[in-house]
Image (cartoon, rainbow, N blue to C red; front, side, top):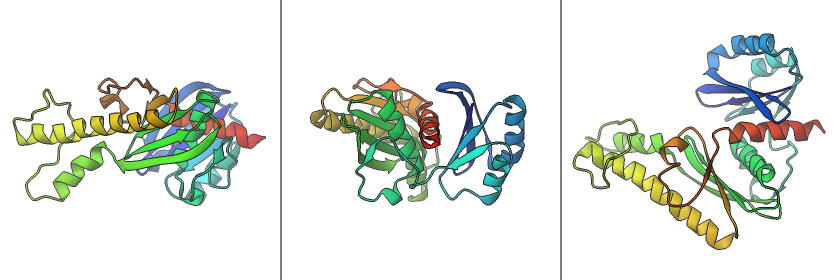
Length: 242
């Protein structure tokens, strides 16, 4: 069994895999990390390997606690990847994008695959049919856009995301919802069209915490998979065991 750990800015995600089958997914605040690790190994004592991916540096305590229970791989730019990495600055490539590219590589081998991750930022990552990672794009995410309008103006309120009923906003709040939601939808469809013009038979995967806002609102056909990042990390753990 494998344990996958994804440490974000505020929350930690945990997933247990038996080979490629996801058995469990949970999350906790960072201060509950130690107790959560102990709890998981009580429930799944057959876990033998773990991988840690983090938006920052992995803390010494985080590594040492986990290494008491199993073998641990810390995902870094020195980790082995199954694809050819043609990114010009691989040392700056985020661990999340490495994991998503890996999941795309295995999802549909020898195919052109675009992964769009709707997280804090929206990231676009393309793997071509030759198994080569080319890069993509990064833009502000859903909540970041709401915060920017509030923080960079004097009167616009801070709103929680809400699906607008019509594309013409009849109030300030509705206009803001339209600007964010419709703006992202147009961005996504426009980006997908660009990739389709260059890459034949393109497969598009939509993932990330905010993907549910947009999965049914795009004119382009996509595959929604909220577990794609965790699956990619599990693939990387298996690949780095070899």
